[in-house]
Length: 191
Length: 105
Image (cartoon, rainbow over all chains, first blue to last red; front, side, top):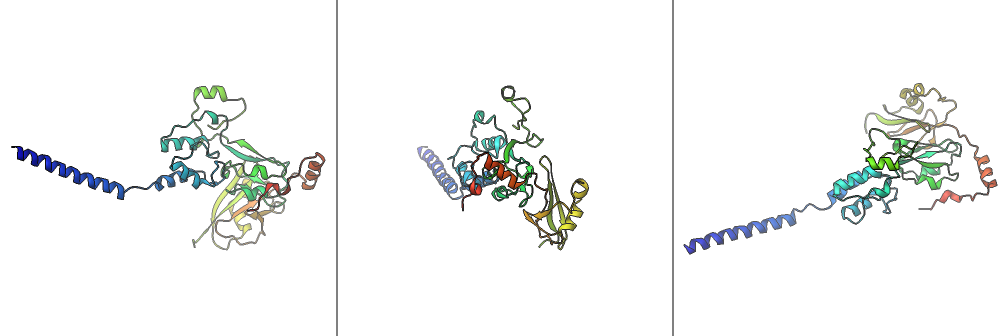
């Protein structure tokens, strides 16, 4: 009686140890590395390599995010839309209170001031400015990521950042209290 | 090499930019692509004798042959006179940005 009990206990223990070892080994050898997450995060970035987050480029910021070393609110061109998708992806709560007043922006050239020097064109990493030497430069809004790198290089201060017009693609359901406190007349916010 | 070249024709106004994608056979020239794109019909204010055009910020001739993924840009003239603008800035005593804050990489 005692012998059969011991056999049962012994065999189950042996099975437990064996399966546990296999599972442990599998977890170690077949472990999915962190890089797929990093790749996914990188794909979510605007990809304009503007450096406003403080990292060299989008890939470096994605790597820091994957390791949990950087806050998810640093990407200015990505705006609130990116922060929200990042917070869903990473399961991190985002503090959006400080960002509310500044929606996504794009560059805009004041035509009376443009002297056609092409400095902004050379600065643009998304080819969003078209123009040539001594001819009018124009922002292609669709291609502009709002990194504002072109603003400081303009010798005549002809470039300013303006809010992106709300379209069906970037429209965001506003929270009632946010709408009441932050909506100014005549200003279109793209939340 | 693909059989057709994918190119774009762009005419940009401050509030509205026309960015037309089209596929043209190899050997197509800039003038032909502009004609095929239909941008002249969409924007009657373009006058190819007056508006200069180029590819990615560089002026080109009408008979230049396109390469794959070229972006033909139809430019508009400046509204400000650069020399006059500079004289005005100097008169206002604004500090001239030498090199526009460019740093050599």
